[in-house]
Length: 354
Length: 123
Image 1 (spheres, chains in turn cyan, blue):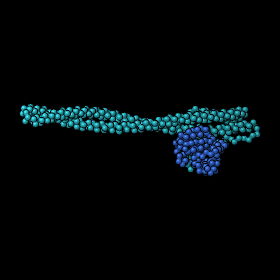
Image 2 (tube, chains in turn yellow, orange; image 1 turned 90 degrees about the vertical axis):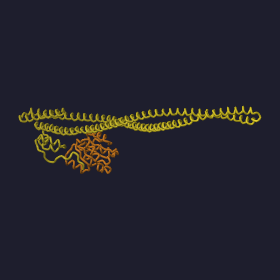
Image 3 (cartoon, rainbow over the protein chains, first blue to last red; image 1 turned 180 degrees about the vertical axis):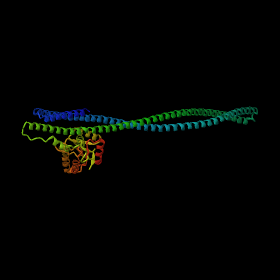
Image 4 (cartoon, rainbow over the protein chains, first blue to last red; image 1 turned 45 degrees about the vertical axis):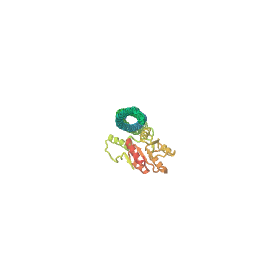
């Protein structure tokens, strides 16, 4: 806006100078004419100086913007690289965590299987122990019967020995038999005691088997705990999967924003081409102003009567001005100012591949 | 990474185009006029693409194209003209001298990168 304002002011001042010059010529006052021509030359020099300053300042500003954009690009690139690196590390950690979770799942499944097998085994042991206990318990009355029979046999043998003693010599042989029977009864009683003790030992063993059954009940508790751990691990896995998805989304967003920012920076940098276009247009204006100044000098010399090669007249310069434009925009402005219609060749495509 | 030589007398153009092309993954070297451009090529730079302005001091764009095409090593290197000029006669002259394409400033970054990728094989 400021440049446009300055340009307008410069155009107004130039037009004023020319108007005063024309007036001086119309009035035919030589001293005034010399003064106006001298002023015109100075104004022209000032305008050229102003335009050169505008060119230099706009070039400095555009270069500063380009350099700053370059810095922004560097920072943006660093942010994008750091984010990408963090995202890659996080992705690896997530993948590793998921592997660990998968392994934990498998181990837990194996533990549950083992626990269930142990529980079934314990139940089978308990049933077997109960059977053995029943069978062992059934032996106790038999031992009692054998002991009773042994005691009664001993009494019978004792009576037989008494009767054999009464019979005297005749009962001597029978006395030997009665002694043998008593010895057998004593042995039978001893055996019955041993069998009884072994049955008791067997019963104690069975009792220990029953403790195993209690252990089997502990396996059930273990299984319940393992189930709970499995549930917790499942929940953890769910959170992990959600975290991974959120991280992936974040990374994608950052990468997307980074890409869009890069595109915007590129387009902003492209917009700086205006400076080169403006510079060339100002250079062309400066050349024309310089010529007008030169023409004013030539005119002054002619008025002073000095013999000098006259410069190309402004009117002649104006006739050939449109041939010195290189941009279609320059030609458009020229024709607009002079109120001319579009003519001749049209501008080619902005982008053309041969 | 494909290499591009930029030839332009405007420091702003060199800065902005260099940034744009480097951000798009190209390796960019620069020269400030036609003579400087020929020196860069003579120094052994083997660009995959040359982008040149037309209005430059010392040696202008058309003279530069002519000199580049005389060198066997760069006879077929893609060469784009990026200029403010829109005159058909100059465009035809550039084409006759061996330019690959003509782009009128200002050109959008996306369009420039698209054209560059179009003319540089494997870019």
